Image (cartoon, rainbow, N blue to C red; front, side, top):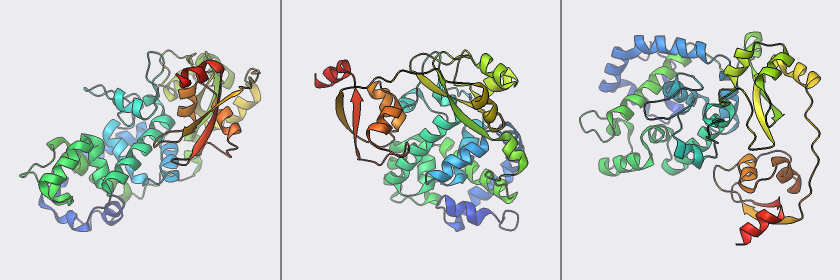
Length: 341
């Protein structure tokens, strides 16, 4: 199998898997039975995700998670941004409502951030980084993503080791069958993909045509109007923004980000102008310690302020936050009084 999949060494390294696992009988049997089907699945998923893959790759590369975790998303959703599982998990990374809430993804009747490529991928990165901090190995993080931290912790305790071949043993069954199959799928799909020397971050003309970017629009904006403004197909714009349930930006926050093709960004800024917003300077300040998984946007939502106000008040150069750092948050009197209570 090493000759057939020379990429295995790189793949196993990225997931912290010992190279000897390539010769594991159960894994060899799995590859033999499923590689044809998974090759077909790989091609279809790649076609479906061609527009969003450069964005996902860029986010993974920026935040310390191997870009091979793209194959985890492939297994989870086949790169369908609005995929729904029988258990009601949603989106590229298949977040359940409770986990989405833990990672500050908005889920309501008109807006579901689990279907937004940038928001969902950023949340998945935070979750995977937290799992890696807990377990210390990326393959354990991937398995915990599937069956939960408690399940993996119990499996390690029962097995007396975190060795992959032991945890994946089909006779000992330390982990659920679904999780054992899940990890094998990720490894095989990564071997298939990397064997074809696929570079998701390649900046060829074709990838530039498919590249996406996010722009800010005010609450209540109609995607139909934006599509007309950009002279693009409305259905395509809607497909890029499946987090918006009725084709219109919600009104819960002053502004939202929508996704448009990079090739349309010049037209957007040339033809679209955000309404002037009168700045309201708040006289009350509260302190906030940055917790794991928090972003400027999530903290802004927590205190009902604009992200820009937090960035300005703390002299931040961008929206990057350091864990356990202290922020000052400008709030109105009503929020301030509520916090004091």
